[in-house]
Length: 392
Ligand code: FAD
Ligand code: UDP
Image 1 (cartoon, rainbow, N blue to C red):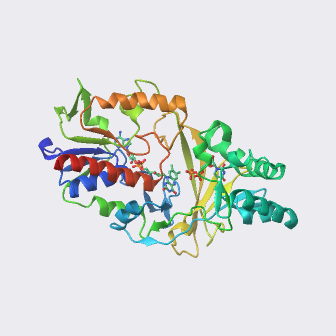
Image 2: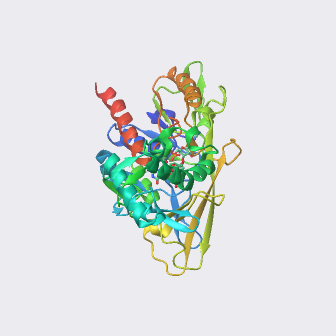
Image 3: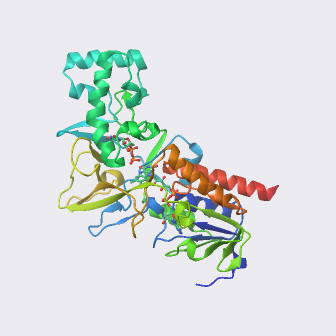
């Protein structure tokens, strides 16, 4: 498909939330002609969902639950979807016993006899307060020997092995912000998230993306790596061999974009194993985390998330974390944030600064552990700044 390059004001690489929101905003609010280039055969990025062979709606790149306190992100997406009210609950499988994760007061009463559990509950409430969250690494430093012992139990039975599987490292060796995502919760609330807005797009994520990208100013080009159409030459950007002076937004991995010229940025990847069973339900919870055994970290059963009714079949997914090597077909899912890696990322980011109107946006392009809502919000902010710049 050859198009007149004069036609496009903006080129966006990647059709996940970062690229799709930016494309829609620039097309609609900015009245720009946008070309959205995506290397996969579909839109939606890692939030993509589809029906499997059994007719079950699955999340192809891992379970995605939308949750946010950012009204702007929620309201924006609500233009393109209705929501199924879904409050995610996760159980940790600790030697066969299923306990609420994040570890909370209900979990406490399941793992200790009642007198001890009552005593620990009282201490937790007095020290941290009811409905408060404390990270496992903080709790481990508690001065009281009893709370330190509780912390040790939670550390060993919920965090240690799961984190080793997920990151290949112990909890102390990774960015503390990562384990802080799943704190110890002084509460009886068994939900995984406490955000104001939570849910799953009623018809799925892919239809949400289809609606978002359905705009006369947006053209989507699938199965195309941006590197095949965009070049960096002599300080300028080239599109299909011709100088391009419009806006470019890149949402992929920046080390890959520059052919790893400063070295590889480290990531973790996942292998997903889907299994379909001839039964209505495989497990009681949306997700069960395997915190003390198994090679996979968790099992998600999609019908819990989607609300889909099927009495005869169900599909589950197991997640096997691996080191990302850059091998053909592997996808970098998680940045490994630490001072050395963030420093290398910063060098790549600086490389892009010499290109006028070139922007890095998204979980990969910014090398950050962002949830969907944060990405939607950042895409709206970047769009604000690009559109405002035009108006002034
Ligand atoms: P992506 O969705 O990764 O999209 C980037 C797109 O760019 C991809 O489609 C990619 O193919 C394309 N691309 C890359 N390089 C190029 C190139 N060179 N040329 C053209 N196209 C390119 N968030 C939540 O809020 N809730 C959850 O429950 C949740 N669960 C998750 C579970 C897993 C296993 C993972 C990995 C992530 C989860 N997330 C969750 C995070 C969520 O996936 C991200 O926040 C979101 O996908 C980020 O959007 P993005 O557009 O930045 O990136
Ligand atoms: N984590 C853990 N045990 C659990 C759940 C989480 O050790 O049962 C740790 C682990 O290090 C994980 C991090 O907390 O990588 C963040 O978990 P989250 O569920 O937010 O991860 P994601 O869904 O983003 O993969």
